[in-house]
Image (cartoon, rainbow, N blue to C red):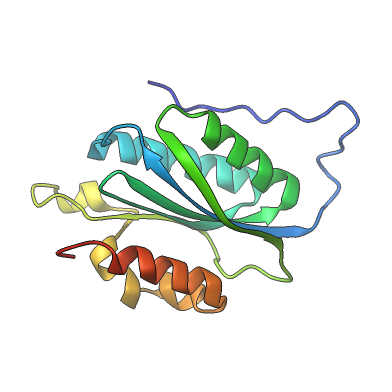
Length: 162
């Protein structure tokens, strides 16, 4: 299964023109429970695309639920969100917030989930452990925006046994 997505610009759109910084927070439901390898592939693709498009943020996954914070140039964030909506892995989208902002709160893109006990340490490389997210530097960055911080905390707090 391929998640490769191509960025296509409108005929009159100049991708070199900087537009406003935009932040979107949403949640979605997984169509099925992705395995570790599928999450790794999704992370690798998202990281490459987000680096290319100047998007930072955080994705967290647990028990069929995704939350995501995306920030970057408005047209890039919106294009990214459209690609995600077209991905069969997701449905039931709920946009919590989408607004122009003065500055980023995340310095890079990260993904967090609860690793399986049998996962080798090298398999967990590049991922945040969802159980440790509240105490991580990513959460310290999120606290710069109370909506983002409260949303992430509510997601983590809703997970039984975490």
